[in-house]
Length: 68
Image (tube, rainbow, N blue to C red; front, side, top):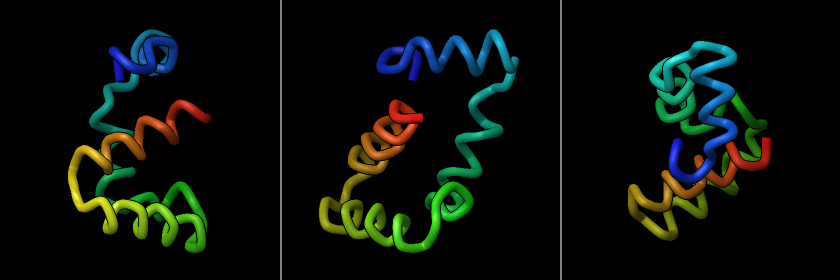
């Protein structure tokens, strides 16, 4: 995140003083269910499953964080 979203990284680490393990774990373990409604989650899952790689999951996560 530091490389791709430096402003967001600065906000999490310097303003909120929140390590990424606290928010990233919830996103990954729930596969976005806590962040979006089920129709949006199924679109994300569909995209992820069609691509089938961890890199895709990271790209989706970074893209979502970039649009917050």
